[in-house]
Length: 496
Length: 116
Image (cartoon, rainbow over all chains, first blue to last red; front, side):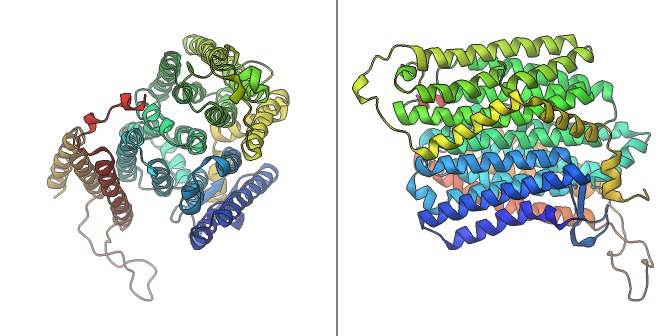
């Protein structure tokens, strides 16, 4: 029992309420909004420290014993995710100060970001399937408003697709919950794990498992459900796109990993090849479509898709090494991906366009921006010593150990294509001789844009250089996921 | 009763998917409403239809004297209805904004080429 687990929900909720009182005052909004997320980050680190030293933390809401009440559970995986989510929220909120329009900052941006983080945190912590649905709704409602505010023509187009796809996914999710409850008679995840593992006719559960798989794949932008993402993400302001790219799809991936390690473990000969296929095709399609784009935002958006494939590959391998690789890759990818978007925002500030054909010569005039781009970009491509290298290495080694040759080959090939895309941005945007007027090229970037990018770049380097403790941590988190007995015991107590 | 509700669920899903595939946003939103209601009925049916008394336990007793109906699916549906109410309100506002900005109700009139 630990009331600590309520804080990741209560802190953003309180922040939203206070922000609504400070309606219309930009400075107050910035201080409270960013302060609230900083507090949330502190709480997340605290939870991580507690979970890391004392094991899985559980709270039964309203003291209704599991499986009857709603349970909040923090194991290593969710506490890692909590930390990364708050980190990305904090960095993008700081980045938003000089980049998001005054009107948005005065009224809507900070409350919405905090509301979305509340949904994300709730989704990471909850141990109840229906409660997860509710947190998903909290999260997507906030993201709908963040995405649609402002409203140019193409933003509306992307927003409608995004809203429609997410609502369909939510309804499939809910239908899955209905069928699951009808078959298992419980919605508590630990109880489900116990019941499904003990049951003989778990085959019937495949229908609801498939509904969950499709619903989460839609949210995670897995093949063949990815098309809404490149249509909608690039239309929002960069701080919001970076925030989304780091978190929204990853919550879908988190739910997939949680469900398919904890209780949907029946019929492995059907599910694991399916996950591997979905992951492999997602990787390939994402990276190949990115190669044909010339808009920086669209290239990066397609790369979100291909990177999701790697994480799903780790899940599909279903070994400790594979899951550990997936967790490490997720952390690395959230940080590096959000950072590349933030750098793209810088480029836009300097050149006024995202079109690679029009951007050029950044390296000569802005060497610092070039350096800040190269770190996350090479990180994504998997070049040592950055974090992506370790992540890809873990997954590839796990793939070879599991003797899944095809998917491992695909993963290596896609790494090469990712490098190609990043080099393309580098060549066109940074190295090519600038055709325009050099005299106007002495703009200064605000410190509030540079600091978050530099911090995220530093994390990308640290994750790669000091990989040992992080890898070890991911291994322990993966052990907890593969063998859920400690999770079940923490939730249901010793007597089960 | 179970059979009738199951058929109703199927009909609602079919109508929802048909409407969702239309190009008009109004019809798409109607589709989302249908989809929500279809899902609610599905949750209700799959929770098991029992003819029994409400889930109350008489004063002074530990267990219910007679067979009681499972209240959980109803609680789930109630929550889902409230959430879909908010979602539909938002979708309608979004549709209005879409119409104001683009001057059309047809999704195919707005293409991704507009971005360039």
